[in-house]
Length: 77
Image 1: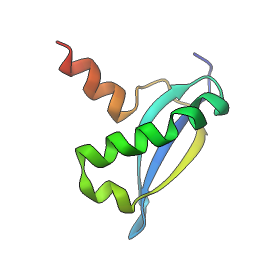
Image 2 (image 1 turned 60 degrees about the vertical axis):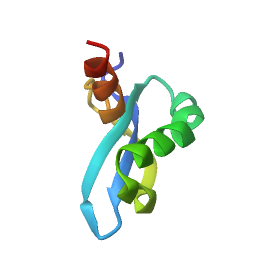
Image 3 (image 1 turned 180 degrees about the horizontal axis):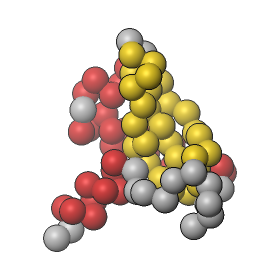
Image 4 (image 1 turned 135 degrees about the vertical axis):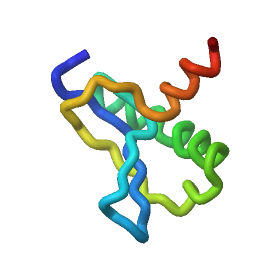
């Protein structure tokens, strides 16, 4: 991982300060873009309200897994 990585971030349109890294980290913006629609679909399966969120790709100084990766890791146990 790099010191900064790309994440797919969901933002609640009613509360713009509420942001969640739903997927990542990605080494490149292109990789995040390629996975974006699948990540949005998976977020909507977990929370139907996620269909109304705004999604973007952000470069963050973070190494933690996004929510989807975190849940997948714990589901496999």
